[in-house]
Image (cartoon, rainbow, N blue to C red; front, side, top):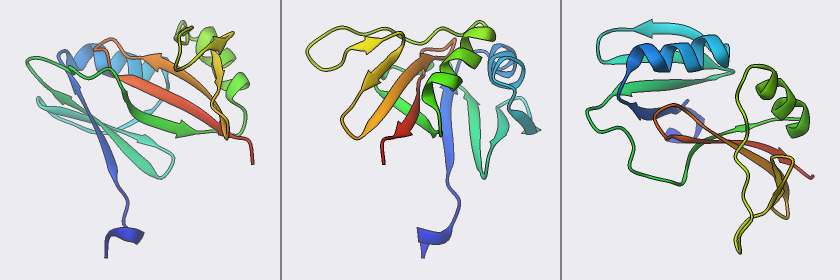
Length: 125
């Protein structure tokens, strides 16, 4: 029953105004709804909800990931908006100029002002 239904991503944030500036202004996602507890943004056919939290996220893994055609072009666009991709160099992942080879995909990661890790992923297929 759920296979053909849209799904929303919910990210915890401590400051809705800051989230609105980051997602709405910096990443240029359209605001489709907002109140004192949540701001809803459109991204393609999906929605990203920034939900007010007193503690924010405590998780360090990727909470959401965009599927793109050209990860390097997206990274350059993000940099032009003042958002720098994360750089990693450890046993699990190594990035070169912000992009990691993950076998079947090229992946970059950014972090929002509340510590939510967001992926940008280009399939190699």
